[in-house]
Length: 493
Image (tube, rainbow, N blue to C red; front, side, top):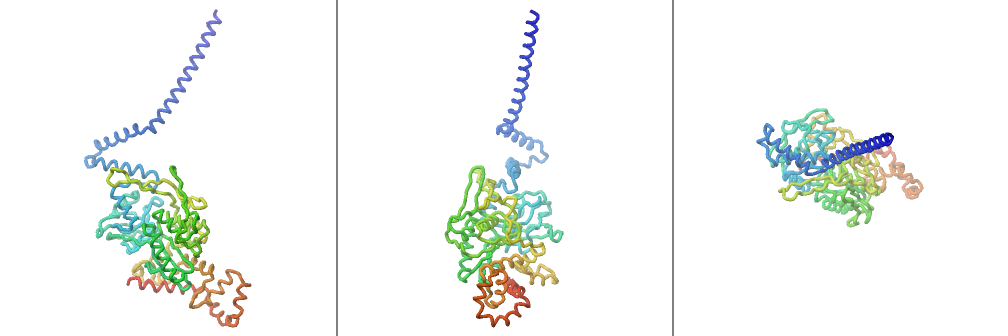
């Protein structure tokens, strides 16, 4: 009897222990699930948001000056801004600014900016704008706007402060890394009309050089870029263009569809351009083959300020073995932003990162950039000299003792591009053809073919060789640079 009672007590104890253990486990699971449901419960979190909103309105010292719109817009900017540097909530004025950008007309100072290393940094000044003419340069950091610290300012706030009515003024303090000095500039806002396709002299004449090499520079990818590029290429083809330099340096990007159309001008039908991969959809873009020039010898120039759409073009032409890339590794901005208008909000919209770009070989651009085939470094001083050469009245911005440096500056990246094109197609200068051939023979190492072609001319070559031996390389490069030196003098007219 006692054994039976003792057994029952033990059994009851075990059962009770199991029940208590189950209760403890159940409580823990319930607690975790309740926490998870709270984290993902929109109603609970909206209640939190409303409570904070009302508390700010009621207790904040200057809460009476705040509207609900101010607070909600501020909250949305913070929420979207925490996602990545390129997503943003755009109130109506900011959305209008963006539309003006893509259409190529707006009131402002004319700078492309981005957050780089936590600093508001100039990616590129837009040419023929107040910022460009005042000497604002790529890489300058905007440290103050109207005397207020711009270190922690957001992109939308910066855009709002820099944009404004044409004729109004804004003062900025810039830190220039090359000189380690602050520069204060006061700019008069203007109606910015952006020409995105330019020739070597910042104009739209588009002529070939003595080697029949054309040059086109894309300053950004706007709504008319592909159309204007087609016009430029046709002008060059009328002059019997044999090769092309496509300059994407300091190009901060722009519209995806324009980048695709630019690539199509150099690719055969069906060749891959870019893929976009996101959570909701993936897309693969291929060349249509319309108005294409798949055989035109091509070199693309890039630098560390070439970003976004510029990198799509460079990566596409590199992976298709369609062009040689010369310069420096690009910026590394390879994400897709969609503009999503918000219904019923009087023109407000979201710019939201929805996908990433991948080159035809499925290499990610974002955070990595595009590596050139031929790396040609550009110092800060080189960039400044190139900028001054391109700027109308650039010589007036430098002291007398530096003007000679500007006038004699040779763009090493452009020189490399010309060398590749001239060597590849065995092109020679019309005025002094004998200068080009000896170099081409050494580079291409085709002695047997050229011996047969050059035998009848063998008697004349001893006379020519002394000229080429004196300055074989300096003769051809200064020649093309001399052309550059003269043209800026014509630009102010």
